Image (cartoon, rainbow, N blue to C red; front, side, top):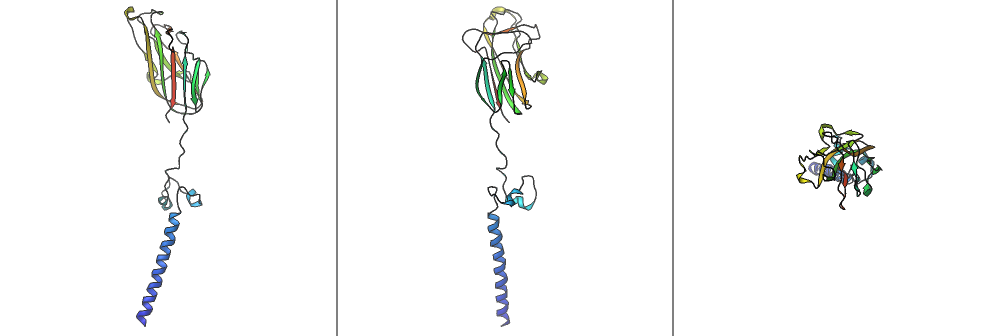
Amino acid sequence: MHKLLCVIHLLIIGGNILGSYYHSSSSYKRSSCHSSSSSYKKCSCHQSSSSYKKCSCDHSHKSSKPAYGTFWQTEFITVPFGSSFPFNHVGPLAGGVSLLNPTTIQFSKAGDYRISFISSINTTLNPVFPHIPVITIFLNNNPLANSQGDFAFQMNTSSNNECLQLVGETIVTVPANSTLQLRNNSGFNHQSIVTCDNGINSVELTVTKLS
């Protein structure tokens, strides 16, 4: 009789343990980052609590919207030393990138942007030799540090008079509400930059937000 009571007592204890296990197991399954429960709101990717172990935070960060813009000039232009290149056409724009005025691009959002441009260079109509046109990216009216935004080529004689192209590309950290310009920064001889006039774009600029 005593042995029978012990067996019954053990079965009751085992049932309580299993019941507790299944209760906690089912409550755990309800904990999810997709849940709207109050316990999820306390879950943080930076917390080290035991509740964090029950929750995945892979979807806790919102993806940023794209920001980009493209601008170009179709007319024949002469850009004096120290002046900025003007644009007369605007392509697709998004994310707060805009043309503030004909020579100035404006960014409303901060981030790292890829800046790329291409400009035609006419050495026939501007026979200055050595011919050293320099185009510089100016951010908030200042050139980028360490010559990061300076691009140029050099022709020493007039034997290759023709329409050439000057290309530049870099990645720039842009603060919010910033402005950007392409300027003639030919400081070697203070020459003007004359573009080509043969049906091509004289200058084109594309900006793309990377982060």
